Length: 442
Ligand SMILES: Cc1ncc(COP(=O)(O)O)c(C=O)c1O
Image (cartoon, rainbow, N blue to C red; front, top):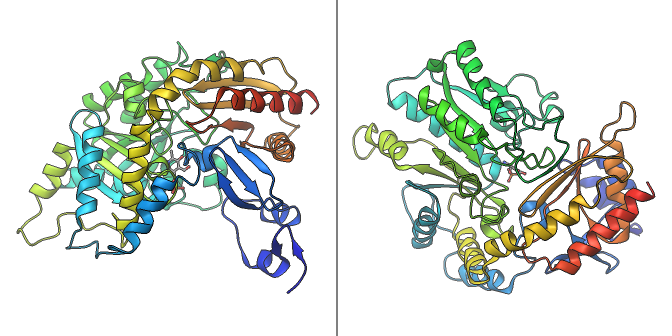
């Protein structure tokens, strides 16, 4: 064996092509996570690092929850796998019923996936299937939003709106994009910006351009996470909802980050009081312990697609995954939802978010901080760029914070926080002090 560097041999480093990672930089200076405990990651030197992004917006209830571990272990020796197609197992139905009860209004049909990317593909395929079965097969185009993130599949990179994720690949699905809602005149904004609802009117231009007869759905994150935490302006999502209704376009909320508590409400739909036609979830659904996602739809969508399904033995929606509703993922999700409910974590986020808000905005005025936004337990910071190198300073700041024992997300010209729902006030203080120190000395 060659010499161990940071707990990983050279040959091991050579073998792994890491996702969404600067492979060359990482392999010259690895950041290896060997364990986790509650709100902390533990690196390969045994150092505790505060998890300022809850994993990847996944582990709101903290890491290594014994309740989830026990449920998963039990499931692995009860039913490790059941065929997902044409046969079912009880836990998938139980979880679907539970999710349907949690979701707003008549969003009560649940289709399981393994990730947020698959949820984005699934929701947009369902949208097209819905219109086809309504006799409108030309309604295929998906309208996303600039700076939107919906995963890494062909669908996600088409209607997603983060340039760096799109430009490598060439053409994929037919899509178009509304403008993002990061407003230049409100760089430092607590909660929802009070102007900007007018940006929803751009959907009228999209309709003029493509015609509603060619548009299947609009997909947006209620609160955009990956592009740097962009909060919807007051009235914006409501206006999108109205325009979708007016033009017979389905509205999909991608709640892969906002689902299950991040906003201080169960869903972004609750936080912003707008009911979409579909809600995509993943990440927090199992507290990150086992991959799982889902698309939840309103009843009329299921009724239309299955109603036009032909003879009863026919498969109405020829779509699904080997691991859709995997028993172990279902067990993890049931246990994760138990923890969320038993510890009232959603209301905990709501109660502590004013404290978090005050803390993150205390960084205004420090060098390189060009903007700060927050909602619930999410915050984004726009960082002044080196000329022509927008992504460099956030990377440098995040590395410096990692060295100090704090993990934060860096992406584009932003830093992002998505602290665990179980974070204590002193941990918020420590994190913000470390950021203060890092920015002051940058
Ligand atoms: C809003 C949103 N949608 C979709 C995805 C993709 O999820 P996954 O990485 O599980 O495919 C993400 C991931 O960050 C996300 O934030």
